[in-house]
Length: 452
View 1: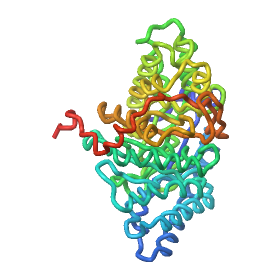
View 2 (view 1 turned 90 degrees about the vertical axis):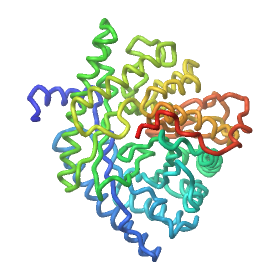
View 3 (view 1 turned 135 degrees about the vertical axis):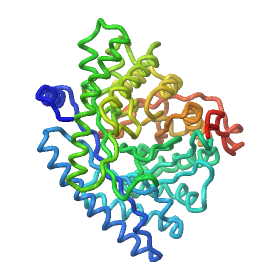
């Protein structure tokens, strides 16, 4: 469908005045064909494939930025889950060497982040996957662009609590080995992880994907906030319609950019992810959108309803605009990366329990949440398990990106730097669930999974 002159002018206005951008272009790359019995040859084949295709992505993304005048904030790569290609080379030393090879390749190609250094462990862990999890603290401490994930459950399989218990220990060790625990910012644990998600830290090139695919993530909280601000008197039904029409326009612009880049580098176009993704920049906050609804401070009563309305309108508007909507799509609520969310924590409007309630209706889950560095590993695992249980029971993607901050107590500030933002360390329930988590095993799949 061609763009009208009015749409072009309106898109230009959104870019210039309301911070519309392409948050990420993520090139998915299959590296299964790089596998070799000689580990040195294997590493070299991976490096060459990533550098060659990463440079193509950078070149053509920059050309499209200039052509259309729309900023593309991040250029990223997602690879085949690393555990799938490292079964015969799965010693801790080789995992670290491969991570450093991939990190060097990203730097050479000028790629911002590479995702996929993780595993799918929803029903159990292999020896290779266990070695990977044990080695992640050293991997995240010795790289700067490699991102890691674990998918520990699905609605059809239930949740692997034994794997979740490994995560709590791994995060504490990663925290100790990296400044302010920043290595934990590049790790996310999922249930129901999508195979075509372009956003980090959880992007990976799924096993059902082609050799290459170009996925794009667009973000426009500033645009949505502007239209909400201009429509203070409408009711919630009318407000939903206004947001849907706005997201329709944003999605059309985003898909145009994604397909253009895919054509330039001659790979299939995958999906457009229409998530409203926050940054620390003024006017780029999802929390501020919610407050424009009429909520004095996000976290106040009514906030969960407001996020549910926003999430639903974003998904519907995007689905009307494109038949290639995928990834996560909806509303992100990262705490440190969203100035409004961070402020709400500082002013005691938002606590961990209310944040968890939000995640039942948002796109992802507990995202970029700083907690005290002396939190026991079992408590961290229990916080993650609580969050992921929401996804299992409700048949949706949920995730957790939890950062234990060494030496910090609840209420103290931590600054992760750059787009990762800053926030007060959140307080957590002081009572223990250690004996419960030690039971291990697997949360059974819910009855809704029996749909064959």
